[in-house]
Amino acid sequence: MEKNHLNNKTNRSKAIRRLVIWYRRNSAVTSLVDTATSSATAASNVAGTVVSNAGSVVTSAGSIARSTLEPFVFDPLRRLQGGESTEEKIGIQASERIWVAVDGMGGDFAPGAILDGCLKSLSLLPLKIQFVGEIEKVKKAAIEFGLKESLDKAIDEGHFKLIPSGISVGMDEEATAVRKKKDASINVAMKLVKDGKAMGVYSAGNSGAMMASAIFKLGRLKGIDRPAIGALFPTKDPGQPVLVLDVGANMDCKPTYLHQFALLGNIYCRDVLQVDKPRIGLLNIGEESCKGNDLSLATYKLLDEEERFYFAGNCEGRDVLSGDFDVVVCDGFTGNVLLKFLESVGSVLLGVLRAELPRGRRGKVGSAFLRNNLKRIKKRLDHAEHGGALLLGINGICVIGHGGSKALSVLSALRVMHSAASHGVMDDLADLNQPEVLKV
Figure 1 (spheres, rainbow, N blue to C red):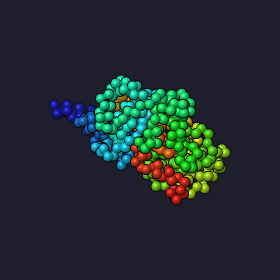
Figure 2 (cartoon, rainbow, N blue to C red):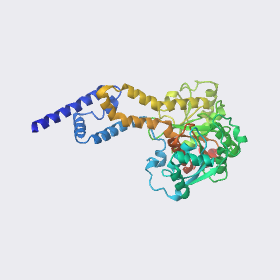
Figure 3 (tube, helix red, strand yellow):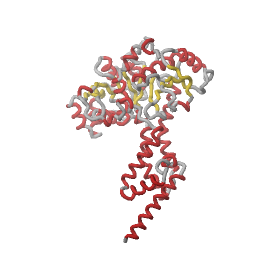
Figure 4 (cartoon, rainbow, N blue to C red):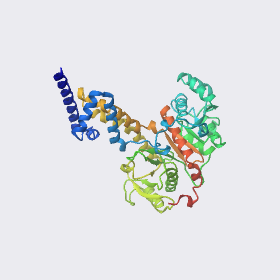
């Protein structure tokens, strides 16, 4: 009996060793498991854990892969809110909550998906929400999404208000439609901010309409000709994203516009991302100052002569995610192409890794060790996790969401809004024309 037990144990140990060898020979995952198999002792410990507790092996493998992959993924707001994700925050005090306005009719999946994200945010973020929309449609969506009970509870607690509006601006309408539809949801939401009833506005609707409404209702900051949309991109440093602007508000730019974008980005990066001396980069085709088109050459000269921020030089496309820059400025056309490309990275990376894993029994066993980690990578790179881009240069906090935003994207965008509001970024933006405020 004892002999059989020893044989079984030996066979299991051999199986584990074969699995480790397979991992080391597979080029797609060698770097992920090199730490786990660095010594015979470590392999033996893993083998023993498999025998005694399969669940703990998955946990151990997750920890190893997470530490190995950490430089390639990020959580852009973990650093902004005390080092941990907002989901871990417990016991939000009523006095901490701030009012924000949400365009409930903006987006491909509005109002249901927008309502879902807003209600989820109430337990995770210190917010109170004024949800602007067509009331009957909102109530119908609440029933369809199974949110009626949560909605009623939030209203009773005083954390949620339904604000009536007229017909919203469609995704395919011209931005000037906001002038004709004066009671459109985006206009009503903007007025709440203008009247001091909300700290900021979120909309996943027509971005052109939102920008037009923001300019008409809130106005531009003094000294800013064109507002810019700024989006956070991941870098190798998991705690420090890079702010890229403009990513879609201005297709054609002048050198003075890009110079203003740099000023806006410098303040946001300093106040919200907590970078003492942001490194400003100009997106270009080469590092040398003589490279680029007429726009790049003229802009380089303006940025290089500016004393209110630190200009780190040209930033090539390959360096955007390197961590060498804190702010990267470009025209809206180029920035939007860059943004849409980045949105595909998570799913493509996951697909490539899956394709590289061998099929068959061994492949399935290996995939079991990595499945959760691959999902985590995709989650960190998924644009839905970073669902809001700030409209900078407006006299108020405006966050633009992806047209296809669902609950997770809405939650992420509201997190961005809360970070901007709680760090007093608007106070410094309002002082943009005072050089002493921004000198490095």
